[in-house]
Length: 405
Image (cartoon, rainbow, N blue to C red; front, side, top):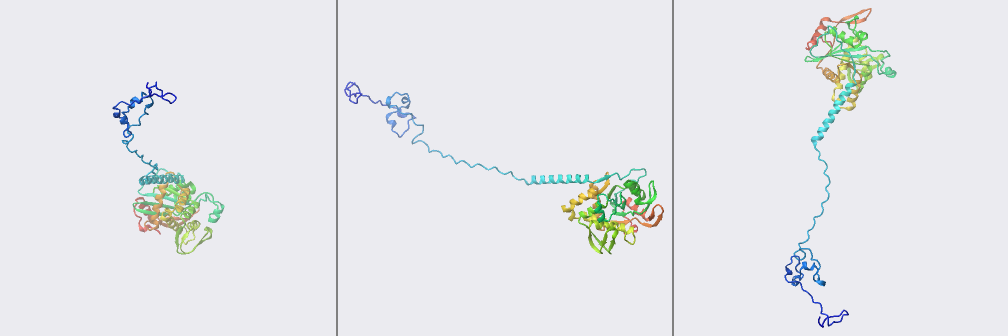
């Protein structure tokens, strides 16, 4: 040691050699980890040696990360976070919406049809017997209005002047034919004197009393030679309900009509008949020709009712069409093989009659008679009635010579 060395007390100890500063070896400036611009190249600093702790108190700290300093690129700015996307509402496809609507309408229509069809009252009305007339062109209905009071309470019977008779009897009978030869509605007077199978000759309405719809259909078939394809019957209560459901029926009267027994008091001129007034109108016999004019009024009214029931004002008005459908299906009695579609066809065929396109007539009458068993009755004109029935069997236009207005 030299004499310039320092002692531990801060004084120089001549026997101790002062520490010398060791410089890093040359060439350390080429170290890739040494950043530039800080003067380290001048000392030749070697980071690998410094990390080994070989330089005593002059050990350098770990070098900064590569690129720090002049060569460090500017920091990248992180793009702002995108706002969360809202879920897009499902695209509405008009075609799919329309398809679902059509399916819903179809289900409603089909379901409504089968529901209404199930409400029809069905009976076995069309008999199968030896000698029954063969099937003929066109379609033939036997439409019966009965005097059944079923569904009417005491108050209703008093208001409608229906009386209190029990059971059912035919109050009106009409034969409806439609086909290529047109539409024809023929009234069959209930007092017509005909042969009733198993009961001799009697009034036509007696067949219903003896054997119900089956015997009545057989009697009509044998008297006319026309095979009946469909049967429909409606009672007093159902008739009133159907008329009120369509909002009444317009009728034009040439003279006043008063019948206290039927509760009828109508003025002359065109007017709308309610259900109760309509029932009295088709039942009254206060005419000069008695039952013959009565059946004529029944045909007129029935055609007007069908025309009103199939009009746009009823069909497209739910406040009319729905009550009409419910009243009609619950009050009509049809054959076991008949369905709602058959009744719709009946209504459309009848609609043409009110416009004058078809023929409405009564079986040609040849005279009157009476007997102890039947009382007063009506005889058919054999030649004219046979010409009428022949035209219907052949589905041909009815000769004007046999038409009775």
